[in-house]
Image 1 (cartoon, rainbow, N blue to C red):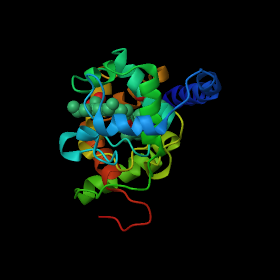
Image 2 (image 1 turned 60 degrees about the horizontal axis):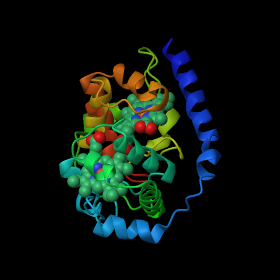
Image 3 (image 1 turned 120 degrees about the vertical axis):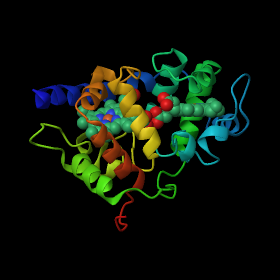
Image 4 (image 1 turned 120 degrees about the horizontal axis):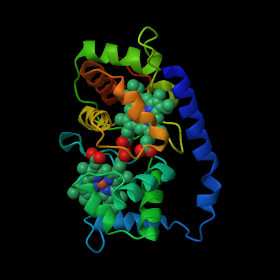
Length: 225
Ligand code: HEC
Ligand code: HEC
């Protein structure tokens, strides 16, 4: 059953990606420099993004503020629109997005998408057992429990599958766990087709801690912790 659902879900992701040209056809053109100014200085009622998301969009692990560098313009824009319309809810980020117009959302999404995605923050130390369990679930899934590998959608080591599927590599374990818990509890529900809600509903607390540890610490071509 799960596999069939996930298959349908993958089709949905693909079809939403195919619809991209209609978004690109809107009259607005992204201005990366204006996006950079907004990120560094803020505008109107919106605080500078860098105060929470870091000078280079690297995020702030201690506060669970996510990394933005490394995500696609499409994904960033979708999240900002979802926060603005309250489809995605979070008390700190919603007021920030509420102060942005369509042009500003486009500009700042283009700016963060233009930053190098290979510039990963230093990983924090994680429990090697949790890392190993997380690697197993993330890269290979669990056939007995009919859990698909996260890598099927998020790519090997969570490098992401642009435009619709975000990178997980380099996000903090606190942020990843918070998002999975939010889906499980029905607080985050802005994913097209309920893909992540279904994935999260099948995870135990141990699974969540394990995949969060893995994605926060995995680095390509580097030794395991
Ligand atoms: C006061 C702190 C704060 C400021 C300032 C702020 N953000 Fe955020 N942002 C957050 C938090 C916290 C989250 C995580 C929300 C959650 O847990 O769902 C977030 C999430 C996001 C996300 C979703 C990332 C993802 O991987 O899903 C995007 C995109 C984003 N912010 C963009 C921006 C931009 C662009 C600005 C500036 C215009 C900005 N933020 C300013 C706190 C902030
Ligand atoms: C069927 C495809 C699919 C599978 C399998 C999948 N994901 Fe996702 N995931 C998505 C999509 C699509 C999104 C973006 C949702 C949105 O647009 O808000 C996402 C978003 C996320 C996010 C939020 C990232 C952010 O920056 O806010 C996390 C965390 C996440 N997934 C973790 C996982 C983990 C862990 C697994 C494996 C246990 C997994 N996903 C398996 C499709 C999938």
